[in-house]
Length: 488
Image 1 (spheres, helix red, strand yellow):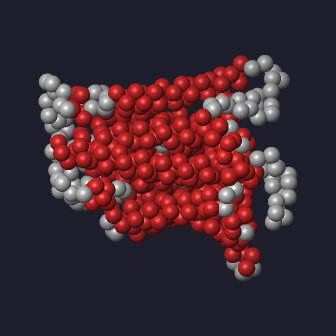
Image 2: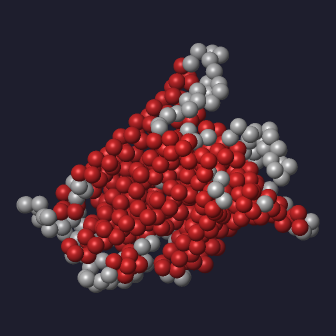
Image 3: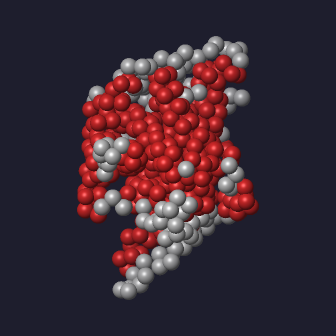
């Protein structure tokens, strides 16, 4: 189905090949072999599966947990449609990101450097670094909450064991650079397997609670209606602004901007011979990989929101079955109660903390890789991964320490949600270049996006950008111009 007059793609960079071509993650580039032509579907699937799985952990990180918990606790199922819509947009955009990497041999950062004017490099790089730091803030806070829960549980059984505060837990997370250093020498397939185990831990907890024990069976009609009925339900004295900001946070936590850069680079870990047949096969199986991995992420996020709605909505101040009074001022610290009916309070606290720690640490690994990609891609700067990890982590720790030190540790959810709102606002800086590159034959040749990917991708760009602009206006300009005494 070649278009008449369209020349074959030049696989070493179809438009502007340069001496820096493909330098991001060069130590793992082309290290995973793929089957030859005519091999079975499953053999191809096993070879290509992995990049989208690594990307999907960013869709199940502590930032997602925080926004999903807040949405379910505050609005019941009213924002479930946002989780579903953002997951669909994520699938479309990640498929485009994978196509860009497979066809051009360039990740999104390198393509932006080569194909955009030189003056855009620093602004694009800085915008992406802000997004990565915001994401890392979520990993810091999530891991600190997990450490706090685990130490508290250990203290109950071993009084000599110290309870670690969230503030101290935040500082401890600076040393997770050691985990990255330990994994580096194992090879990329080992890292993918390690991430799979962590993701399975998270998914298994919530799927068992929701589906095996049937806590949502009586809510099927309400859940189904919420998915297909958009709206921004108001909170008392806050109007719809709060739910709109949270909706953008959900989108930012799902369609993470740095994941678009990451995915376009990770697909190049496969040993592509760069001919038409291999390119078509790589596009096909990377698309399947993205659909499967991100559909799993959607089920996890939807499960968290639904269980938060069932467990918390309308119950602030009530006493739960284990005798705990629900405070409702920081949902991430009370979220383990969603697993209480399945496991009991103590086991739920431990397993939730383990799953939260797993999500934070797995996202730490992928966040470090994304940081390398954007720094090398935009600026051609190479930094050792452990140093890159340490710098990013320290940048994330500073606001966490300041906020917790000043306001106490009952504002973790607010800080988590703010970090995801920042991600949502940064999204257009990654989405627009991605859709520009993959929708033009100049860059993609015969593998340019078809009408469906073009339509769905640009619709996502317009929708998210419009929500960002409206939310920023409402949060900043609208409040500045509001008459004194007007409820905000």
